[in-house]
Each structure stands twice: as C-alpha cells, then as structure tokens.
Length: 442
Image (cartoon, rainbow, N blue to C red; front, side, top):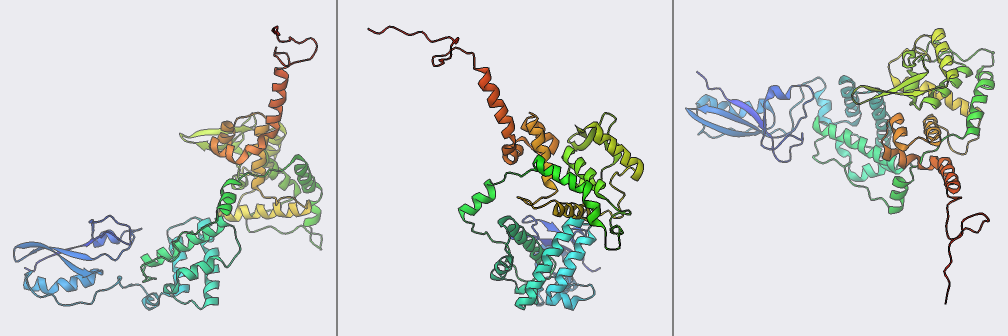
C-alpha cells in the first residue's frame, strides 16, 4: 500500500498574505472565498518507512510540492536524494488567459481588479471610485509608456500623484487607492515585485498640515441666500428648464417622471429642516413622518429612533406629495444605485444655484445640513443635542460648528450684562446704586 502524506503551507514571519507566523493552512482552506494568497513554502508530513517526519518541499505550488515528494513516497523512505524541481514564485493560473496574466499587463490587471470587486458585491460608490482613479492611472501609463504592473516605481507613483493639482487630503486618498490596487496585484499574481511603491510617507510642510487639520469650520447658508434659492426655485426654475421647443426637459434614467421647481423647493425644505443627508432625503418614505409632524431621521445603537420636529406646513406638503407620487415622496427610483439617485438631485440643485448666483462660497447640498446645525445651535440647543440629531459626537460639533454659536453667545453676553446690573460693587457710580464703604485715612 502506497504511503500517504499530508501537505500544508507553513506561513513565515513576513507572510505576504498577512497570516500569522508558524501557522499552517491546507489546500481546501485556500480555495475558500476571500482567501488572501501568499508565497510561503509548502511542507509535507506523515510516515514513510514507519518513520514520522515533516519535510519542507521548498515549493509554493501544491502540484509542484507533490511532484517533489513523489520519489520519497515511491521509495517509502525519507532517506533518498531529493529530485530537483524548479521552485515556482507563485501558483500558475489555471484560468483562461494565463499567458496574459504572466505578463502582468496593466490594462488586464485593472479589468480583473474591477471584476473582482463586482464579483464580491462591493458598493457602487467604491467601484466607481476605483474606476475614476484607475482611468487616470491608465492615462498616465499611456503617456509614460508603462505596459506592465511591475514597471511601477516609487518615482512614477509620485509623478502620478503630482499629475493633478488637488488638496493634500485628495492626494492622500489617491495614494491609498493606488496602494490598494497594487496590493491586490501582488496578491493575485499580476505583480511579481515584492514591494508596494505606493506605500510611503509624504513629507508635508507644517503650514499645510495646520491648514488641513485646523481650518475645519463648516459654512452654512445665510437667511438671505435661502430666500434667494427658494424664490429662484418657484419663479425661475421652470422657465429656464424649458427647451427651445417649449417642452420640459425629458425624464432622467433615475426617475420615471419630470421634476419642476416646486419639487426642488420641497426637496431643499425637507433637507434644511431635518438635517438629513441628500441620499436619505432622496429615499424619504412617508412612514418616517408621524402624525404630530415628527420625522424619523435616523436610528442609534439599540434600535433607538431619533426624531426631529418640522413645521406643520411642511408636514402637510410631505403628506400631499405622498398622495400624488406614492410613499416615496420624491419619486420611486428606477435604480438601486444610490450614487445615481443622488447625482440626479445634485444636478437639479446645481442648476438652481446657477440661476441665483453668484456665490461668495461654492454652494453644495451638504451646506443645507450645516445650516440645520446653525439653526439648532442658535435656538439654544447644546452641542450634545445637536450631535444626536446629526449623528456626530459633541466633540465633532464643537470642532466643526463652533463659529455657528455666535448669535447664541452674543445673546448670552447681553443677558449676563443685565443680570449683574443691580449687584453691589466697589466701582459702580450710577446714582441709586449701593456705593462701597470707604475707610478713613490717617
């Protein structure tokens, strides 16, 4: 009866797959979904000639490891000269197109990387984010003559990051995304180089660092700007949306009906008076509105709902929209991709802002959320209460919205001046006030 040996991969200290040192994995384990590949050596263990032993094959591929141990099994002994077998740097791909993968072509690696994300149901925004950045990388490769993934060096990565003039935070995001792509290439056989050229620390000047970290105050819309926006939505939006033939611009790929200025005004009002993000407003369901005009804006730990109250007039508008358009008061969506849904509403808002410009600061949908924070703070609510409504911590509210409490601080200062007006002291000279007792001097 032929001897049977067991094969396991023994992970070392610098395992490329991130597996713990001195741990063992079998071939079936590595065939599971989500397994991170590495190039650690495979060892064989079992009994040959009634002698139990473990022996390294110095191979990374399971088939090559079995080929190395075949003469030992045939001789049923550990004491024979090993037949030399050329070690493989990585397991040979068995899928169709293996020759392409051996070459490590940049274009094919990008396509495989994105296909892998779609296979494992990555979020639409994540895939779209990678697509945008990898399109820029392919454009850079075409200009620099980069064909293979192995051609990326640290100098080329730095040149790629310098290709566009972006903020420090955006540059760091580009670097992290490129490092993730190259990590995937190293783990899936598209890159044979063992280092990741996109992983390096960027030396940032102290002034730039301070500007990036400390200048974090958010900008809201003033009452004058809000008036201008709502007026333009009701009076100008429909007129400027008409084409030359006099017909309203057709529907988008996201919604099944046309939208008018009144729809945009209602959308802004809900976002302004609830503080919700644009994606939550676009998917707003009428069941979130209670009979007493409280709106369910989010849920915290322990399935505890958080509500905020809206004016009765806005509650009536939301109920009327539900009667006309269904439970989703801003329309049923043809797609489940939230990025597409929000993009449609961003385009409508951007068109509105073009009508009522110019602007001192660039208007964005999120500034309506900042305006909600300003209104609540001016109403005398604490940073902790505002944090609960926004889904932020008290420290975050103090950091980002401290400038919004100026009206509240001025009101408090004025009240404090009046509170101490009649208190006896030694410096008040107003008639009728208690004067300090003076001591006689010698």
